[in-house]
Image 1 (cartoon, rainbow, N blue to C red):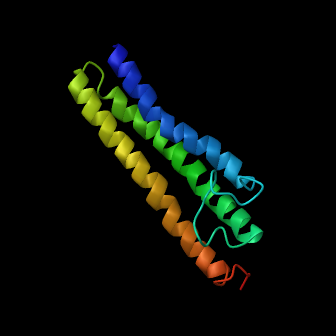
Image 2: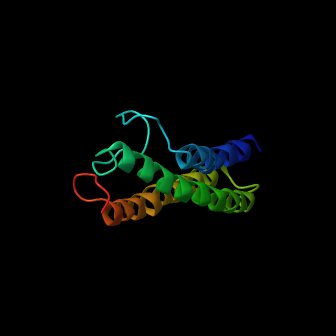
Length: 126
């Protein structure tokens, strides 16, 4: 049972982080452009305006994605109740892999496309 609880907690970590960071990003994210925390791509770091836009846009995606992934992850782990540690470990790896893929691809591509549609190469609004 301890392995199942650990698997559940591991599988809930990323969706919860996406929800929390999504709320923070929707409010504009880090105040200043930096290389440590935030949505850091070349296009998002061109200006303060692109920085805030990217964080607000990505924050909405992360928040919704986290809200969707949270119950789905719980359902998957509930289906594994009573399974061996090996099965739990493999399932946790798969669930976390899917979560990371959603975190990256469901937010990176749309945010970069939105930045490209809204700003020119120098970070000025079109």
